[in-house]
Amino acid sequence: MKAKRLLIATLLVLGLFSLLFILNQNFSTQIPGEIFQILKWVALGLATWFAIEKQNLTAWILVAMFMGIALGSDFPEISKPLKVLSDIFLRLIKTIIAPLLFSTLVVGIAGHSNIKQVGRMGLKSIFYFEIVTTVALFIGLASINLTKAGVGSNMEAQNSQIEKANTMLAQKQSHDVILDIFPENIAKSIVDNQILQIVVFSILFGIGLALVKNEEKKAAILLFSEGLSEVMFKFTHIVMLFAPFAVGGAMAYSVANMGLGVIGNLLKLVGTLYGALFAFVALVLVPIGFMVKLPFKRFLNAISEPVSIAFATASSEAALPKAMENLEGMGIPRKVVAFVLPTGYSFNLDGTTLYLSLASVFIAQASGMDLSLGQQIQMCLILMLTSKGVAGVRGASFLILVSTVSSLGLDPTKAFAILAVDALMDMGRTTVNVIGNCLATYVVAKWEGEV
Image (cartoon, rainbow, N blue to C red; front, side):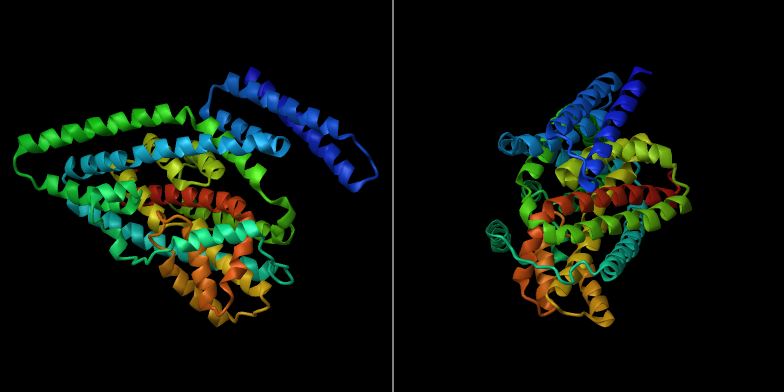
């Protein structure tokens, strides 16, 4: 009850802050800035007290997110070094992913010896991924054509964006969508954090183990894999205790480094993207949830922590271990979670594909080029292929955007200016990627009769 009263008090202070801000902006009222500062930090203090009383990781993550925003806004120089907190967390998460995926997939496949189910899940997953990501592409197109956010935009890239873009382009490597699914060296796949390659290796290893006739040898490997799986989930619990610090550091760094002076011309783009992402969730993912009779309350409870981590860190990988654990906790079998969720990280990037179609047309509009409907559909068909299997490539979204813009006959340097707000947009599209993949896991489990 005390936590509830603290939450109400926090919301009241925030409401008063918002009311005074509106009065200050739209009327002749002149409210001293100190009042806003006091209200902001009182609200944060109450929110922190609420998190202490609630003793809930999600509450701590949300408080840390707002604390990071306040620090980044008020103390930018102090906030910039806090990125190290997020980097530490991401490094620890990356150490979890490979052994966790390997152990859960091996146990799921060899422990049940149902190799045919793996094939069925693969086909159903790819079918679902293709349909949903295609819809996401066309929602992106519809949104940017509706708002025409790029028309009349003065897109001038700053030196910082040009340097960042050139760094990404310098690291560009040839990418074969089919070939890059398969590992040439599992150690290299782990080092490069190629999730799909780790999944493929683990599946083949699990199938190989299922075919072993010697039950004693088979049981030894299975026992090791089961033990490794349990240890890695405990490892995840330990690492997640650091999540609020990572989230706060990531938000503080992002706010402190965001070039507010160059965002003016791109605010309409950011607004269009977030509106399109919301429309995709409301018009596509929610109806799918109703069709498969998704238990929405349990599902939202399961994804709240992973989604908040994904939003703050702009990293799907950071949310993967906790998402796997929570989805399993809501009743989805481990073998389904371990197969569908990481596979979706390469083939079901709903937020990213929506962003790519939207941003490509935005740049064309800003360049004064009027794309026909046929050209836009052709662009979507290209994006359906080029956006697959690149989740592990640094700056992949930007590289694909540059390639798409070039194919339209536009100057690829026009895309550089978008990097000014890329961090803000990345938070939104990564969040939708995680939500979409969590839902996909439940859908495939439902099709398989596992839930």
